[in-house]
Image (cartoon, rainbow, N blue to C red; front, top):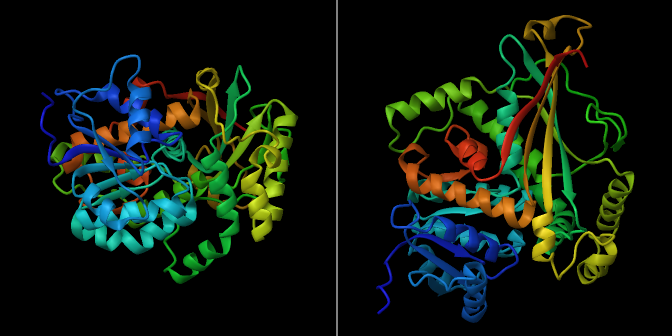
Length: 450
């Protein structure tokens, strides 16, 4: 006889039958145990049959655990989302594009007081959720954190790790992240990422209007002068790779974290944090140094950079017109030069892929030099974050570890509100957890001069 369903589940995975959702289920099953913070699990989506098939795939070759419950919920059905959120401690929101499907999930969690983590990399969605749901979430005790996947935890924790390598009196001025995606087989990207990029460009005006309507957030005090914009494509950098500027959510999220820490120099206090954690939090943020941050896609092959450039040009030219959007979304393989496909990658392709994210920082060996006329940046620090395939392996790893931190350390975290991953998880043991699960953080080089 099956055990009775719990009234409230530790984790509910919404969008469980999607491309990424089924990998999130598989990762969650690794930690589902009576001795784990994750003791009860539900998986949810619009179709019970599709969710059941995703659960069977994730559990294979074993049968699905008896205690995992399937819930039916639809982003277009507020009542079903309210019922789902009322039965969750933490909702893992995996149904994108998030500007279409994510807001209703976050709103249901804010109303119910459930915590919500999503894997969005869409700036407009994230900033709109913050603008519209921060106050309701703070009142109900719902902690809502977007970008808890490859977008943007490796960039956030990678930047914070890099920043803390600048021992006083040195200080960074610029930090550029170079993202290198590698594979022994040709691999196609998640179609949801491509669709989000198309819709993001199409609705860029809405994001700008939203930003104009909100109070200007404080900017961190960064020594020296802002860096020049530089060229779109570069062929000379400390890594010896071709690189192209990337309009990445990572840049937006890191800047939001730095703004939050500018407002709260000791970080965000926990609802019921221990004295030990309070001291750890304050010590952590006192060692973080702000810097101008940007992201570039990098490769030793110029042709890969050209393919990204072609995809960006197509999206930039066509996404603002209804017929252009139709073409972009109808024929992703053509307009992305084969980088994205509705079929998604095979399991073998996923296993063959990995990423490296290099953080190249330039600054002063003594921050006092910043006030001297004609002073030049005289110190370089290079760190690296690396791990497995970004969309289907790293993203589930990151999302589940964020959830486990929430479940096991909830009192040390803010009572509620909408925040970035770095602002919430920076002082926790999330980096250590990621290192134990295949995502590495390393110091590559520290040297004087550029």
